[in-house]
Image 1 (cartoon, rainbow, N blue to C red):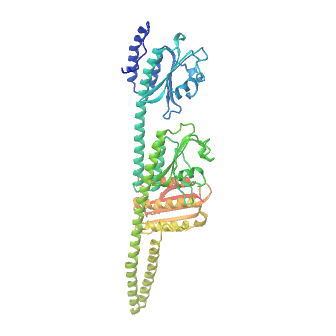
Image 2: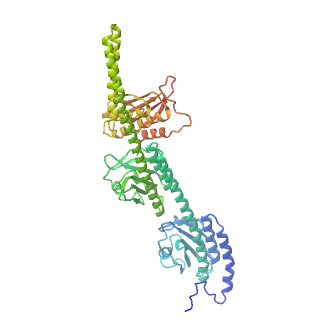
Length: 560
């Protein structure tokens, strides 16, 4: 059996050879010109112009499908005046009439008919009526990237087979151009997401402040996804999800807000299922609130080894395009990497916490077994010397020294008891402040002094108290790591009056260290201010308590 020859251009009827052969050099020149283009839209414009010139069409247009093939991502035209283009409005949907036929069945379409009735289904609204229409799918590597349309052939003639052959060649060239650009963009996009994942992993494992690391996750998610905000959610103590970090171009007071467990979105994320919303204003799964002001939203669980660590939310502005399949896949990979980094960071903090506990236990044993025993022995020797002393002044002085040793022993025993207390035991705000001071005493080498004023435990709410403890921990950490202080004073005043007249709580931490150097790293100070602003307060710096006015004083305040 003889092999079937491959399909080729249509046979040339008598009298048509000259016309067809005259077009071939023009087609080759056009392809050479198109192939030399580096910018996609200008290349597509040249393809439209060339198609119109080779076929004698009055108008040509090229619609580029979006990545998911559900609509048009771009629409390039030639031969339409500005008034007609303005009347055409937004990008055509491509689901009606002849355009719809190309989308649902990507094969060439030709149609003829009288003016005003271009063929079955009609043409898109506001498009000029013509007798003839030619539509060819733009394909490459087995994928349809768009469609090339031509209308209004000169002399009211229909498009013939030679027109179709020429346009098919140009459509293939357009498909290759679009495909190459898509591949290049996809490679760059994946590279950006990988770099973002590396930045997040580095921030989480750097051993710095956890809030700064979570903020890095939110900022990278916002930047990489092109979203209006990046939000990190973590499980709240009483159930639901708490907003732990927010990256947005404007100030927000949502940090620390808890989304209740009965919210449908919380249930989806805590079950480990991602959620994609095309329009937050109309989606019934979202409750009324600030989220309704956004458009598409991508909500991804932070899962590791079957355990949900939290959620990652990336909302886009109203009217923005929905997230594509590639963006969803890359976002899911980013969330998985962030969850892995969170797990590793938690393990690292657990090891550090265990080391601290072991160190505290060793210090407590040393204080009990060595220091107290020596002090007790010294007290007994002084008591014996007191009894043998003949001079009354000497007996009184030795007695006072023995009393001071007894007080010192009691203070050391209190310190031992505090070192042996579990740091996670639930307690009021006053106890939590004392616990932070006691924990800071180990790396500092001394215990900061403290003072309380007002109803600290009863007046300060849970959210404000939680942020105050975080601010105290951050400030004491800065004093140890950067200030090199030898004296620190901590004051918590629940009778403070804020600048706007509201009652609130004020945390003051003063030290005699080196102060804040010019041009130094200020992420901790930014974090203090962000925490205060999230609960409607403020944070500011002042001079310290050194003799020459050196050091730093941090005043952190917020309403109840």
